[in-house]
Image 1 (cartoon, rainbow, N blue to C red):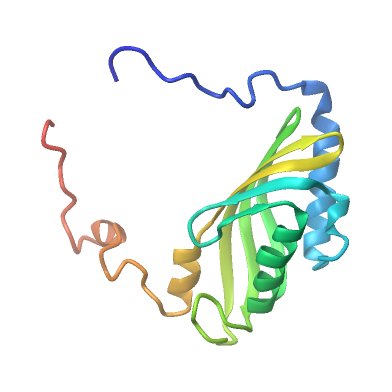
Image 2: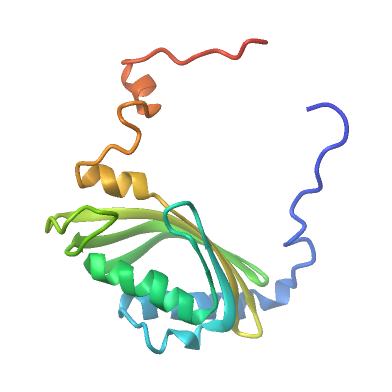
Length: 177
Protein backbone atom coordinates (compact mmCIF):
# COMPACT_ATOMS: atom_id res chain seq x y z
CA UNK A 1 0.00 0.00 0.00
CA UNK A 2 1.57 3.27 -1.05
CA UNK A 3 0.81 6.70 0.32
CA UNK A 4 -1.11 7.59 3.45
CA UNK A 5 -2.37 4.73 5.58
CA UNK A 6 -5.67 4.68 7.47
CA UNK A 7 -5.50 5.47 11.17
CA UNK A 8 -5.35 2.24 13.19
CA UNK A 9 -6.73 1.09 16.57
CA UNK A 10 -8.57 4.32 17.35
CA UNK A 11 -11.01 2.65 19.77
CA UNK A 12 -8.33 1.18 22.02
CA UNK A 13 -5.66 3.87 21.73
CA UNK A 14 -6.39 5.52 25.10
CA UNK A 15 -7.21 2.40 27.12
CA UNK A 16 -6.69 2.60 30.87
CA UNK A 17 -4.51 -0.41 31.71
CA UNK A 18 -5.44 -0.05 35.41
CA UNK A 19 -8.90 -1.40 34.50
CA UNK A 20 -7.65 -4.80 33.30
CA UNK A 21 -8.55 -6.72 36.49
CA UNK A 22 -12.06 -5.20 36.60
CA UNK A 23 -12.63 -6.09 32.93
CA UNK A 24 -11.45 -9.64 33.53
CA UNK A 25 -13.85 -10.10 36.47
CA UNK A 26 -16.82 -8.86 34.41
CA UNK A 27 -16.03 -11.14 31.45
CA UNK A 28 -15.38 -14.22 33.59
CA UNK A 29 -18.66 -13.68 35.47
CA UNK A 30 -20.58 -13.13 32.23
CA UNK A 31 -19.23 -16.33 30.63
CA UNK A 32 -20.19 -18.26 33.77
CA UNK A 33 -23.68 -16.71 33.50
CA UNK A 34 -23.98 -17.79 29.86
CA UNK A 35 -22.87 -21.31 30.78
CA UNK A 36 -25.59 -21.32 33.47
CA UNK A 37 -28.05 -20.44 30.64
CA UNK A 38 -29.10 -17.22 32.36
CA UNK A 39 -31.33 -14.95 30.33
CA UNK A 40 -33.63 -12.94 32.63
CA UNK A 41 -30.86 -11.73 34.94
CA UNK A 42 -27.90 -11.57 32.52
CA UNK A 43 -28.14 -7.76 32.71
CA UNK A 44 -25.88 -8.01 35.75
CA UNK A 45 -22.99 -7.95 33.25
CA UNK A 46 -24.35 -5.70 30.47
CA UNK A 47 -25.09 -2.01 30.29
CA UNK A 48 -28.81 -1.57 29.54
CA UNK A 49 -28.06 0.08 26.17
CA UNK A 50 -25.09 -2.05 25.14
CA UNK A 51 -24.48 -2.93 21.50
CA UNK A 52 -24.05 -6.55 20.38
CA UNK A 53 -22.70 -6.46 16.83
CA UNK A 54 -22.62 -9.80 15.02
CA UNK A 55 -21.70 -11.00 11.57
CA UNK A 56 -24.30 -11.65 8.88
CA UNK A 57 -26.72 -14.28 10.13
CA UNK A 58 -26.33 -13.09 13.72
CA UNK A 59 -27.47 -9.50 13.30
CA UNK A 60 -26.96 -6.48 15.54
CA UNK A 61 -28.74 -6.11 18.87
CA UNK A 62 -29.09 -2.70 20.47
CA UNK A 63 -29.84 -2.95 24.17
CA UNK A 64 -30.24 -5.75 26.66
CA UNK A 65 -33.82 -6.67 25.66
CA UNK A 66 -32.92 -7.13 21.98
CA UNK A 67 -29.94 -9.27 23.02
CA UNK A 68 -32.15 -11.43 25.24
CA UNK A 69 -35.08 -11.70 22.81
CA UNK A 70 -33.27 -11.81 19.46
CA UNK A 71 -30.10 -13.72 20.37
CA UNK A 72 -30.19 -15.58 23.69
CA UNK A 73 -33.71 -17.01 23.43
CA UNK A 74 -33.51 -18.19 19.79
CA UNK A 75 -29.99 -19.53 20.34
CA UNK A 76 -31.01 -21.53 23.40
CA UNK A 77 -34.17 -22.73 21.60
CA UNK A 78 -32.01 -24.08 18.74
CA UNK A 79 -29.18 -25.48 20.87
CA UNK A 80 -29.56 -27.25 24.20
CA UNK A 81 -26.96 -28.70 26.56
CA UNK A 82 -24.80 -25.74 25.54
CA UNK A 83 -21.39 -25.15 27.10
CA UNK A 84 -19.11 -22.24 26.24
CA UNK A 85 -15.40 -23.09 26.08
CA UNK A 86 -13.14 -20.06 25.62
CA UNK A 87 -9.88 -21.43 24.28
CA UNK A 88 -8.07 -18.13 24.82
CA UNK A 89 -8.88 -14.81 26.48
CA UNK A 90 -6.96 -11.56 26.29
CA UNK A 91 -7.40 -8.55 28.57
CA UNK A 92 -6.14 -5.01 28.07
CA UNK A 93 -7.61 -2.24 30.19
CA UNK A 94 -11.29 -1.83 29.30
CA UNK A 95 -10.92 -4.37 26.47
CA UNK A 96 -11.21 -8.13 26.36
CA UNK A 97 -11.26 -10.69 23.58
CA UNK A 98 -11.80 -14.42 23.35
CA UNK A 99 -12.15 -17.19 20.84
CA UNK A 100 -13.49 -20.63 21.40
CA UNK A 101 -16.47 -22.84 20.83
CA UNK A 102 -19.88 -23.69 22.12
CA UNK A 103 -20.56 -27.40 22.43
CA UNK A 104 -24.28 -28.04 22.08
CA UNK A 105 -27.03 -30.31 20.85
CA UNK A 106 -29.07 -29.15 17.84
CA UNK A 107 -32.47 -29.52 19.50
CA UNK A 108 -34.57 -26.87 17.74
CA UNK A 109 -34.96 -25.14 14.37
CA UNK A 110 -31.80 -23.33 13.23
CA UNK A 111 -31.83 -21.24 10.05
CA UNK A 112 -34.53 -23.45 8.59
CA UNK A 113 -32.84 -26.72 9.55
CA UNK A 114 -35.13 -28.77 11.84
CA UNK A 115 -33.72 -30.26 15.04
CA UNK A 116 -31.36 -33.13 14.29
CA UNK A 117 -30.25 -34.13 17.78
CA UNK A 118 -26.62 -33.86 16.60
CA UNK A 119 -23.93 -32.71 18.99
CA UNK A 120 -22.11 -29.86 17.27
CA UNK A 121 -19.50 -27.19 17.82
CA UNK A 122 -20.17 -23.50 17.29
CA UNK A 123 -16.93 -21.57 16.81
CA UNK A 124 -16.80 -17.87 17.71
CA UNK A 125 -14.72 -14.81 18.49
CA UNK A 126 -15.81 -12.08 20.90
CA UNK A 127 -14.41 -8.61 21.55
CA UNK A 128 -15.79 -6.64 24.51
CA UNK A 129 -15.54 -3.11 25.86
CA UNK A 130 -16.24 -2.80 29.60
CA UNK A 131 -17.04 0.55 31.21
CA UNK A 132 -18.06 1.15 34.81
CA UNK A 133 -18.22 -2.61 35.47
CA UNK A 134 -20.57 -3.44 32.57
CA UNK A 135 -20.15 -4.54 28.97
CA UNK A 136 -21.06 -1.62 26.68
CA UNK A 137 -20.02 -3.07 23.33
CA UNK A 138 -19.61 -6.63 22.06
CA UNK A 139 -18.32 -7.43 18.58
CA UNK A 140 -19.07 -11.05 17.69
CA UNK A 141 -18.13 -13.42 14.89
CA UNK A 142 -19.97 -16.78 14.96
CA UNK A 143 -19.03 -19.37 12.34
CA UNK A 144 -22.55 -20.18 11.12
CA UNK A 145 -21.31 -21.77 7.86
CA UNK A 146 -19.42 -24.33 10.00
CA UNK A 147 -22.52 -24.97 12.12
CA UNK A 148 -24.63 -25.50 9.02
CA UNK A 149 -21.99 -27.79 7.47
CA UNK A 150 -22.25 -30.02 10.56
CA UNK A 151 -26.00 -30.13 9.90
CA UNK A 152 -25.51 -31.14 6.25
CA UNK A 153 -25.94 -27.71 4.62
CA UNK A 154 -23.14 -26.29 2.42
CA UNK A 155 -23.84 -22.55 2.23
CA UNK A 156 -21.07 -22.21 -0.37
CA UNK A 157 -22.50 -24.83 -2.75
CA UNK A 158 -19.12 -26.52 -3.14
CA UNK A 159 -17.39 -23.22 -3.97
CA UNK A 160 -15.69 -22.74 -0.57
CA UNK A 161 -11.94 -22.27 -0.66
CA UNK A 162 -11.45 -25.55 1.18
CA UNK A 163 -11.50 -26.99 -2.35
CA UNK A 164 -8.06 -25.37 -2.85
CA UNK A 165 -6.79 -27.07 0.33
CA UNK A 166 -8.05 -30.47 -0.86
CA UNK A 167 -6.50 -29.94 -4.30
CA UNK A 168 -9.91 -30.08 -6.00
CA UNK A 169 -9.52 -26.59 -7.47
CA UNK A 170 -6.57 -24.43 -8.42
CA UNK A 171 -6.46 -21.08 -6.63
CA UNK A 172 -6.41 -18.06 -8.93
CA UNK A 173 -3.42 -15.69 -9.03
CA UNK A 174 -3.84 -11.91 -8.93
CA UNK A 175 -3.45 -10.32 -12.37
CA UNK A 176 -0.63 -8.00 -11.38
CA UNK A 177 1.55 -10.77 -9.81
